[in-house]
Image 1 (cartoon, rainbow, N blue to C red):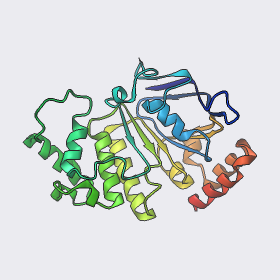
Image 2 (cartoon, rainbow, N blue to C red):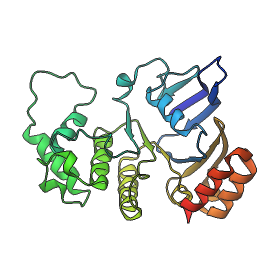
Image 3 (tube, rainbow, N blue to C red):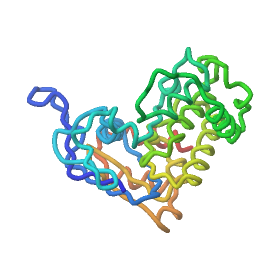
Length: 268
């Protein structure tokens, strides 16, 4: 369970350029919730993920996960509980390390590192079976350096790394935005497969309205650092892109008109 209570984040506080990125935002996720997050540029979507993951510290409010207060924990201490995949496929893997070495790092996340680095036979077998589930042929390329993979392959490996040690929460920050439509579709298919199989509690930011509707059991819309819509159940199942555009137009500020057009294009 994720509990975000009255969270505030302000950039350049006290200056003429002060920006309230999160404005008393509250959010509750039940175990297994798969929530898509949409909103215009500057709505606070990535800032919310940064505050949950510990990349940014809160200016007010609290974040707790399964009853544990994370609000003052540094990012590295949250890493054992939270998996995250970023928009840039290059960010999730070490380019000069082999696929199996990257997976070994992920598999040992949160553990005390000793002097032994060698990958064990049991680890290698685990990695091979997990890579085979991706259906990308990477189980036969485990000694290939990650930097030689395509963007889609690298993002698929990053997704696997983020979920190898089942996280209490998975954060997906526009993780298909940098991929071509066909590759993005494949990565989203893998995402759904992993989230469903592992029953992962998940937050996924997307600018694509069709993807926001098609994936997950719940959809939230953000604007000006607040949640302005929370759609679930039958309402989400029956939702159309036009419904979402109308909602965006009626609930979000006029300054986001260009974002509305961008969202419309992304959803076509």
